[in-house]
Image 1 (spheres, one colour):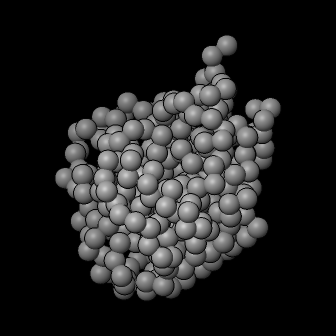
Image 2 (cartoon, rainbow, N blue to C red; image 1 turned 120 degrees about the vertical axis):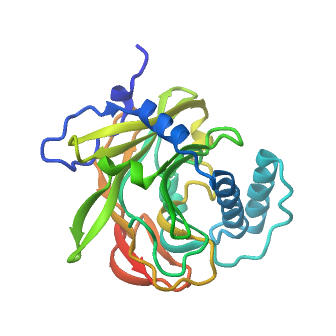
Image 3 (cartoon, one colour; image 1 turned 90 degrees about the vertical axis):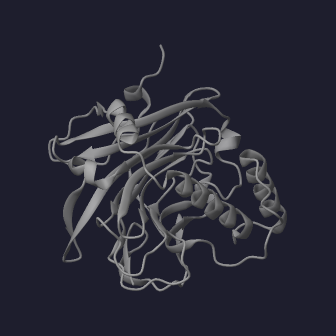
Length: 317
């Protein structure tokens, strides 16, 4: 039997008290919203996104010089750009957040899923005049990022970037936050109200050599999860679990300025991982721990408002 979404999806984190077991399929809606509200910054977003990932590949402290050269060359070939030679290690574009240890990043067989709540005010506040992302990956090298993107104070989107797609088609969802009110809700954490978007980001093997990337959001208005994107592609387990920079960041604030001041709280609540074994069985959800990830502080002006290691954090400047 051909596998369906219900057959292979990770069990969702329980968010609503009467949550239905099967998500609604809202992929067409998000495709339509992306087309109806074109992002004038989309091309610039893609360039900034790739340059940031290149910088990460060139300077990843968990990689030796040979591995960094290999990754930078692979990016140059993939995106048909000459990115130059590897630089010496220096802080990557992570203002603050959780990075997976390589041993944990590679510890799955037929699927991995990340569930988390993105702390995302309508605008970032402070001196943000460039890009600023609150993003994460689920450990799979050819997985995806479902994230909130800010450009200055006047442009905020929910976006999906799929690393399994060929360039230049990786930015597959890009919707202004103003048009997804059903997915933005307010929760109280550490004594303060926080606007969040609840995301489930999954990469799963459908059959030997075929994988699927998919994103679901919690729809608080309908008390259900909504499937908003999926993509099927060819890959091997070795490719998905390769020793690589890609896939190694959990929830992070990704930065593009040398210093931040006056920003509103940004971060993560309830970051949890679910793993699928070689028999196709999903295990239980588990909060991200210090044994699986470590905290990286990029020292660009953010101060920690709270940290529950390693699943909750909020930073502001």
